[in-house]
Amino acid sequence: MSNNTFRKKLKSGNKPKGGPRKSIFTWMEEKLDVTGILGEGVPVQLVPPVGFVALLALVYIWSNHRAENMVRKIEKAQQEVEDLRADVTTLEAEYMLSSMQSEVAKRVAEQGIVELNQPPIKIEVE
Image (cartoon, rainbow, N blue to C red; front, side):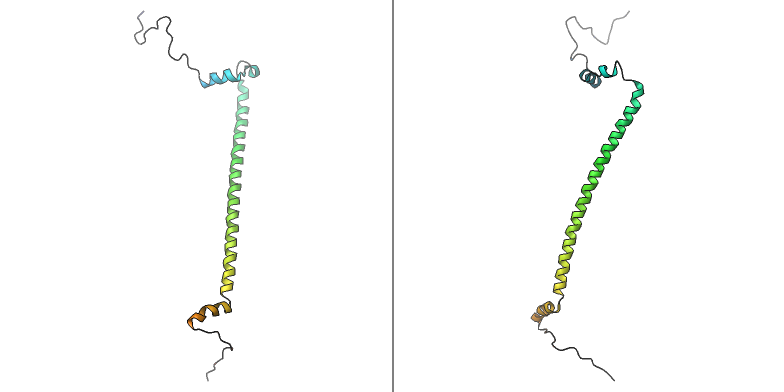
């Protein structure tokens, strides 16, 4: 047999750096200790129902999140509508006040135009 040419042999007493790396799944298995509940492994027949329930939970969470966002948007739009309605009411009241004959007479009095005191006369041509 030939010698190993790619790796140098470790001398006795030297350990590899960092030791064996643990994956996240081995860490979870150590911390959660599910062997008491599931035994030595996960039963394959339970994977589809559990996956389906997890999918339903995600859809439920997404639906609630979307509904709450929609409620916030609706409340914001209602507040804007109330503000615009108040502005329109104020502008209409100002317009009605400014279009009254007495208010118009006050504004045009500065230009020398006076309000008529007698009704207009109808001129008839033969």
